[in-house]
Image (cartoon, rainbow, N blue to C red):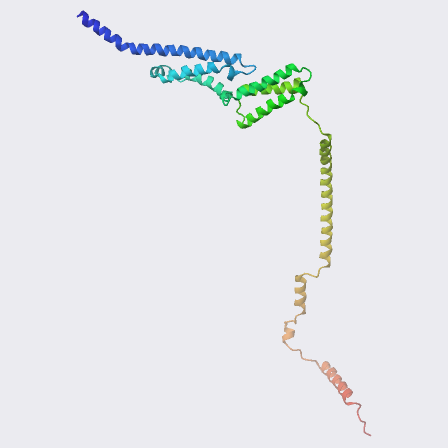
Length: 287
């Protein structure tokens, strides 16, 4: 009986041992993840000015990502620590830190050794500035142009998504070159300024002159139209009324012939006799 009870206890221990070990492993992973996240946050803060987040905290970021992926692959850890509540603190915290790395385009620092080449050119430029105090603008100009040209080409190639370590370094270099050393002298061409002022002064005069000429032309055309309208023949309505007046009347006097009066008959006969005498000649008077 004692042996049987011992075996039952031993079997129970063996059955519960894997889950207990798994829980211990998950707790261990959780503590490691918290430590790695804390180390990355501390490194990011310490390398904020000037920005050296990508190159200065690359190892801390890689270790943090590694332990996080191990926890995600462990089934027991996933069930215990992930997607258990609305806040989901573990995943949310990791996402915030990962977004900081992505927002700084840190992966570009390690692509094709761009960061190494940029750092070498920056170091050469800084050495030139240190070795030629007072003559930086003349003697260090080739180094500055080389560094700036490399960065501009990299910026165009990546569509502006350049590692933020290089962005911050280039911005500080340009500011030091132009403001502190005053080596960036913009050439001012007075001829261009005078031409621009002349164009600005001439344009209003041309506008008003063209407006005045156009107004005068319209007034002249309007006067010609008025003169032509006065000399033009009467309208078709007037012609039509005149034509109607010239037509024979269709009144009762036209349809009914007039009866000549006696006086009219005498006048008519006398006129006929005179006409006959003119044609025949003088009458022969008989004695």
